Image 1 (cartoon, rainbow, N blue to C red):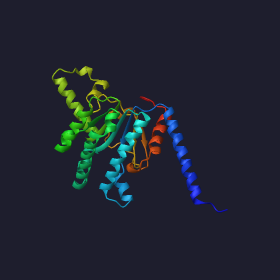
Image 2: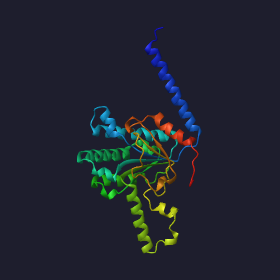
Image 3: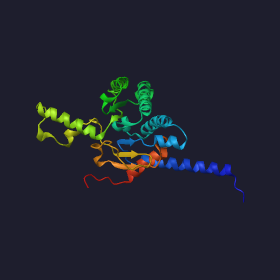
Image 4: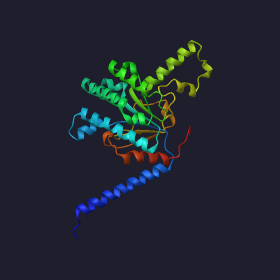
Amino acid sequence: MIYNSDIYNHFSKKLNEMRDLKLLEDTKKNKMPQHVAIIMDGNRRFAKSLGLSPEAGHQFGRDKIEEVLEWCFELGIKNLTIYAFSTENFQRSTSEVHTLMDLCKEELKKAAKDSRIHKNKVRIRIIGHIESLPKDIAEEVKNIMYQTESYYKYSFNIALAYGGREEIIHAIKKIAEDVKTDKLKINDIKEQIVSKYMYTNGIPDPDIILRTSGEERISNFLLWQLAYSELYFSDVYWPALQKRDFLKAIRTVQQRQRRYGI
C-alpha cells in the first residue's frame, strides 16, 4: 500500500493540535500558579545550532518573552518574573554586553508604549542593582516603573543586573541600617520582615522556577524566594520554547503535591 505523505502530515498536524488543545483544557481545569519565574537559558546555543551569531539568539529570545507574557494573560497567571541579565553577565564580551543592553533599552521603550501592557494593567518592575546599569537604561527603567506603578492586575518582573546573593546582602545592609536607627528591633526580624527588604517585596514567592536549555542549576536566581518553589527543567532552548512546553511545565507542577518544610 502506498501512503500519501500529504495526507499523513495533515492528520499528524491535526492530532498534535488536538493534543495541544486537551493539554490547554486540562491545565485550565486545575489550580493555576500565582507566580512563574523563568531562567531564560539557551539563546547562544540556539543561534549556534542555526549557524547564527549570539546576537541573533538574544533577539530571538527577546521575542519569546512577548509570547510567554501572552500565554500568562490567557492562563490567568498573575505574576511572571524573567531572569534577563545577571550581575555575572557583565563579565561577557563587550560586544555581547552592548547587544544585551541595547535590547533591554529597546524592550523597555517598547513596553512603555505597548497597548497590551496598559490594557491588561500590567505593573512592570525591574529587580536588581539598577545603579550598575548604563545611565540611559536606568532612566528607561525608572520611566516604565513610574508609568505602570498604579497597575494591579498583572505583575511582570524583569531581573536586570540581578544576583540572588547580592539581593540578600542588600537586604541585610538595609536591615542593619534600620536597626541602627531604631526603626527595627532585632527581635522583630523574622522571615516575613526580611521578605519586605527584598527587591520582590509585595510579590508572592514563585510557585515554579522554569529553566530552559537542559541545564539544571539555579544560577543565583531568587535564592531567598525559591525556598518552596517547584523546579522544572526543560531541554528546549529558550527561543525555541513552544506553548505546549510551557503548558507541560505548568501541568507537571499542578500534578505534584507541594510540601512546605518537609
